[in-house]
Image (cartoon, rainbow, N blue to C red):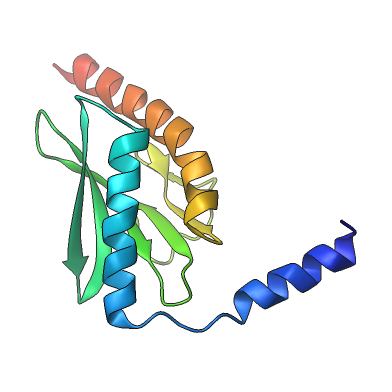
Length: 135
């Protein structure tokens, strides 16, 4: 596929209809279940919920219940990953807020899931090492 064809494909994806609130909730629930399957872990839990009326999936550390990150399903079907403590202004994925990238935008659920396993693995290892050193 040529660059121009790829640009046209991205434009088509960007022009998709916005998801209504119910579709966003369903997408968040589906994403939560896919994360649980893909990242079967005794350390991490994925909890579907809402924040300010928006559907999210919280990434929680099971032993302490700490929220490490949030995953938002946006109106256009894109996914936003945000580390706990990061602000909406932190839009540079090289600017780490703690153990994970502060703010990463993904075109869709599949693109996010491609990255999620390794991102969560490395971030969780850093989180646990830091906790061990503080003990």
